[in-house]
Length: 313
Image 1: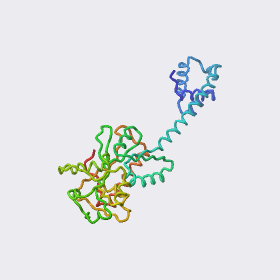
Image 2: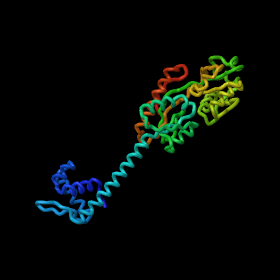
Image 3: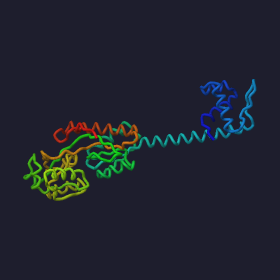
Image 4: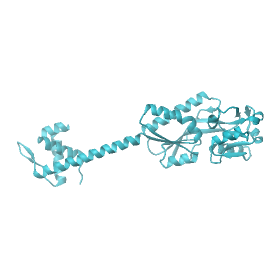
């Protein structure tokens, strides 16, 4: 049976007015259109709903009983629509962003604060994880977009570069005497370097940079968390080598020295989205705020961060 809710509304309006002209006027349609709709409904039901004469229109007994059913059906339909709309509104207010921890620490707090001011009903989830995990969450539709440090090659993903940050050294205590404000890649070979694990983009970028020089990169220590790096530096175990965004949370530490790696690599940082589909308004607003924060970071720290390259992915 192919009956639309609009046909039921026409039927009920006519059953209330028992006048085709008045019903058509209330429905904002022509009288012939209403007549045709009622005829189609009767044909679909196999039942005469109205008795028509030149002077009057009245419900048949079956039509009267069907009017009761139609009101119930429309009531349930409209209640269901309200539930559907409420669910859609809740979904539209949901936002999940995946980012590796140091980037989440630097970029996302101000993004979340702005979104909560502009959209008080927004429910934001932050997934701080390794780069590969962030991309997998995005592919699994567990995140609306990801902040990643390399351009993914997956055919289902799109990459928009936001900025590029330089690699730096962070030293403390006795190691400050051996680390100059400006260092070269070859100088790093003489230092007990502390970096993140092989799963990190920081490790991959440095490994690639050394490999271009024909050198295998073998750091003194590798850890998962930047906070652990901080403890090792403070204890003078070694010298940290990380991208600028990665060391920003550690800069308030007392007694630390920040040094530039003059010929070090530049790490790409960007927004990753799925190629299929169209981002919801809240997602678009969040990505625009991430872009704004990234531009502000570049403006405030031009010596440590560079704008995106002209090449788009």
